[in-house]
Length: 316
Length: 279
Image (cartoon, rainbow over all chains, first blue to last red; front, side, top):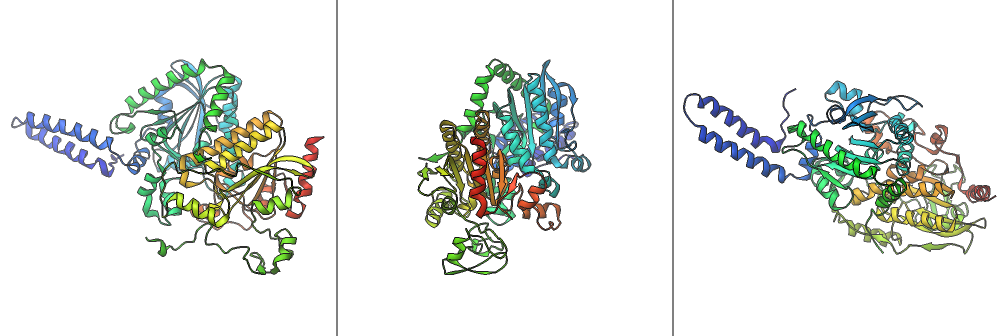
């Protein structure tokens, strides 16, 4: 796959190309000082660019075709994954996957939206847009985890729940609603991580938990910037403004106390150094699970609910 | 593109008003001309085609709650502007305009009252307030109404009419789905009944949270009920939707409603149901 370069990454790539050319040249004459100067400049530029990303640029990073997806985290953060298929009611939804996994040797139940890597796998995964059976499979796995007292980790990465005829026939709304209620009472710790796109009901449908984490360049909101633009501005052209208005980044949501913790990404985004990303998430998850597993279950559920009850801004 | 060049119409503000202030009104479904007082006596339904006009909390209280028993609660709650949201209009201005237009403070009215002599905690959404959208105020008022039901050990009834979550409070609106669903879980754990009544239209985040979580889900005939709006589905699948798609009758057929009850039977049927829980 050809490397995908986002607009704001172009200055970095241009410098990288320049350095490569100079290295070629360096074989004949000594310009090592010039090269090392340029390399320093690249580092500064990188820090500068990624510190000052606009919200829309972060949305683009969250959708980067090389960004790690649920299956990558399963392979690289967890071990001994046993995929469990199907909702035992209708069918198996490839847009949500789940199963047994181990984190540093500890058993966990893992559930996440699954996007594809290329056109073929994206068609198979329906671009990570789940149908009701996906949410019902998740519900089945949550109950299984509760039954055997294992913590649950969910990975959110979806452009939305699928808006289709069959999804409506089979009760997309009911499937999501039931999960929201179920997750508010499941008697085992739940850690939610927004790893990429967290679009609306389709995301929160597996997103209620004790700890809500979010990767630095992920986005999470009630609607995508594009759809928001088309509804409120009556045009697809205002996605940048919509992204700003929606305040959908990890930093925004931490400020609004919607999420608990930001999981930092390597410079340049998770795709720029996946190994570092996996290691960091692994450390964070391990700490969170240790903390949560010490809390008495009735207190855990109380705190989980109170956290969501406190969300909202109004005037008395 | 400037606002005056818009090619599409608003969800709410620009659709033809269903109940103009004149003496006569036209049925939006069959075009029957109905005398206004007659429409009122028919509980805002068309005698000819049984079309149920969209009505608000004021009318539902009149129709369902025993005379003189309704006591409104939390009427003072109004919306904040946590995101300082501006689209084609600043959110606070939108709120002020809606309050002026509807004489309501937000998209839901809550209170207690009696139905057939049985006390209930009662919530009714108002579609004419920013498309009945759910933001923090709707979520908090439902939370408080449910709490009241818990404390007083009385059933909770919510009448839904909503386009979904309110975009102008983006993450907060989304979280109201979890908030309302969690408090309903507590009701269930304490044996307090929740009756959900879905009216035209109930879509998006409202359907995908409390509206679908009733111990009993009741809908009015012909009500549009769904997760995604019909326009979004048509755009996604690039096909025309079949007739009757996402109507109450379609949902009943697919197993998501307990029953469809016409407006003129609603009070009797609710009394029946409340009696069942009581005895």
